[in-house]
Structure formats: C-alpha cells, structure tokens
Image (tube, rainbow, N blue to C red; front, side):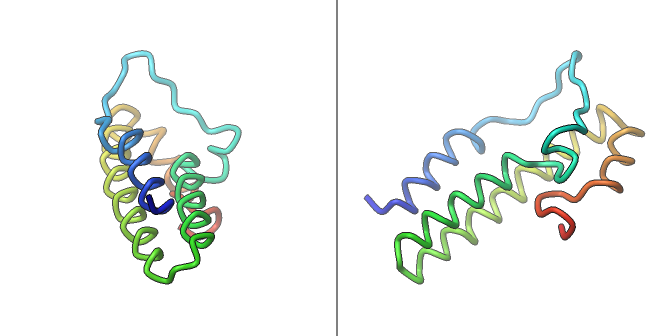
Length: 106
C-alpha cells in the first residue's frame, strides 16, 4: 500500500468521519499551540501527510497533500462555525488574533 494513501485514509477515519458538535462544558482554549494557530492538530496532520508524500518520492503524491488540505479546510470551516455559534464574542476576537492553520500566514 502506498504510504501517502494510508496516511490519508487514517486521517479520514480519525478526523473527517467525526462531526463537529458542541458540548455545554466546552472551554475556548487559547494557550499552548493554540496561541500560534487555531487548529494545531490539522497543522500537524498536514505536515505529516506532506512528509510522508515527500518520502514516497513520487511527484503525484503531492495530489494527496492537496486533497488532504482541501478536506481539512472543509472540516475546520464547520468547526469554526460551531465555535463562532458557541463563543460568539470570544471566538471572533480569537480569530482576529490567531491564524487558522499556518502560524503568521493563514
């Protein structure tokens, strides 16, 4: 099995099959890695997928990185909508202060 495919499949099972849902006891976290990006898990996941694809040594593996990035963006948009609903003032301030997935850029 191609490692890039296996990585993407694992990410799909872990992250994209789980629907974002609120919890009445949720707390908005802005410390640790959440000081740098709003979605550090997705940042790490994309870096792992990119590294795996790069190690595979095939140019077409980059299409897996692009597909994973698109899926992450779709997933994080739904999570951000939920967080905006759950923490209307605090989350919009957090969004203005902290980048989405790439520190200092996006």
